[in-house]
Image 1 (cartoon, rainbow, N blue to C red):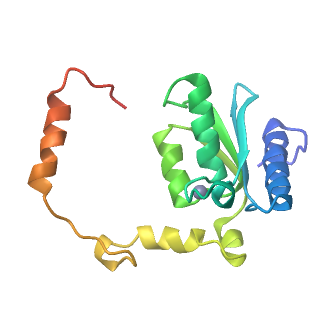
Image 2 (cartoon, rainbow, N blue to C red; image 1 turned 90 degrees about the vertical axis):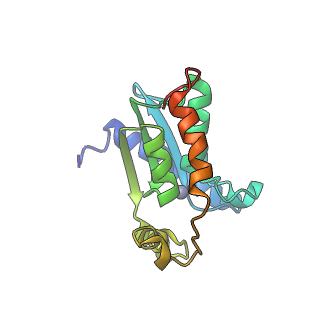
Length: 161
Ligand SMILES: [Zn+2]
């Protein structure tokens, strides 16, 4: 990591942190994120879970959605995400799906756990086999569901991602 305070990663992280602080003043969660492409901010947001009653409205998810809308593509290769806190498993999954190649973060998931957010706990849950998780997992009707997979495999009309 660079100690040069004026490097671009530092500048974009400062913006993500600023967004997290502004959100706390509005009564929201202490999380901010920005997405950058070619050294330019494409999207910025904060945690809107309580503001819009959406449990998935984490800052990272919000900026991924906005950036994809702006670029009119689901593929955010070449973008960098700056998150004021290490992404939770949901956001990390979204980052993989969006093909974002670089994540810069400030607070860690154990810092988040210390102030009451379940990040670390969810990380340890998802590394367990389904049957050992706190959420009940039941598998059924695989043969029926596989029909859609087969249809997709054989379709000439699909957009692969
Ligand atoms: Zn998240």
